[in-house]
Image (cartoon, rainbow over all chains, first blue to last red; front, top):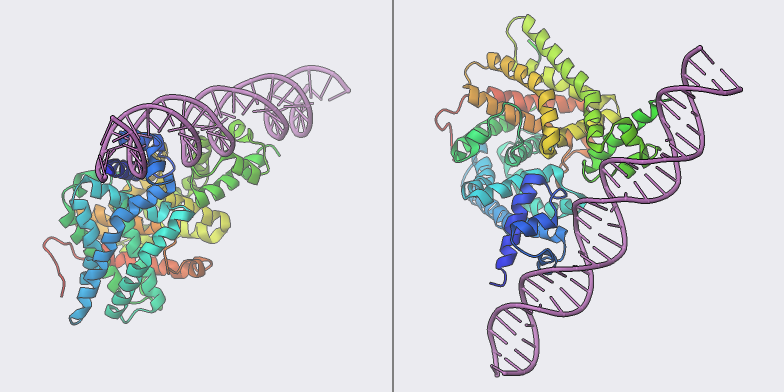
Length: 213
Length: 213
DNA sequence: GCCTGTTTCAAACGTTTGTTTGAATTATCC
DNA sequence: GGATAATTCAAACAAACGTTTGAAACAGGC
């Protein structure tokens, strides 16, 4: 059981980072939860920052590879719908949620990181995300040729905003959440795709399209 | 110049909290930037937490009151479009951005807080947001009677996700941001409303509506 | 059984944090 | 202008943090 401690540290860190954030989580809280010694973090990972990166690497690599594979598979066929592209991007992460409480914690951490992330982590995440986001944008642009590149980028930005916010599980007053999300990812996926697909497909703004009644 | 220091502290805290987050910002950094003594924070506000609340209160109160006033004004007339409701909610905050660098910092802080917020701040924000969100939901529900309450709530949730993400200014690889947002809030407003309005208006899911080609 | 490398452990390190204190300074009023 | 209150200031406080250390415990190979 040499790297059993390693896994327990990753699990504990993942849970606590997702729940309380990176800086608010102390190494003592992590090692206590993992039933490990305080120095174990530095022995196995070197520093707190590298522990955080390890938490991301463990799941993000396979996640984004699956996304890329799905997007690539789409383009071998004929024309592609917006819904299919969205599904290729969202479903892998949603499947992670379905897989268990640890996966759900990770997606929460992932959503948080998009806004929360400190300087150092941002570079790391950028390296991880750049390939899949560029591919995502390219595929989507081919499906929606009527959009100017800049307009497409903004709508992609909004899309990622919805996903980050939802994954992060931002608790809002009177909002659904706790009751619905747990164990009902199919409903959530359909809601997400329905909302995002029509938004992406909306006619370009150009001039003002409509206004108050 | 008794409460001049107070204002300078609020400005400095607002800027630093928005840029680096609450916990990552030390009182020493704040007081240095505000050209005030370290103890000034406790003299004027009592604690770091209360300083944060004061930063929010200063602008959030008038912001949400303006939103409520606009929504109320809408309902005096006849039928209301989704675009009008969205404008009533978004425009006041976007006007804050337009007003100057301090307003932009505040919206960034506001967007961050929706995800970042610690336990204590969450309760505070809930109290501030509950009235306007309930009103928002009620008005929107009347405009979109075909949506089940739960479906409406989710789409509202997605909407707030887009806004929080955009205000927070989450920097993504290859994403637009720096170039566009500054000084071009009209374009951003139209983009937001175009994207969100069609999403809110999308037909209810009920059964699956479409799938991969 | 001994040796070598890996892993764990308790203890301490130096910083930084939010907060408190009490005196010094400045403003306000009569 | 002297008394009174409001504000500023330098200095120190205890607590918590990430990190380091060096010895103890354990592992597997020969």
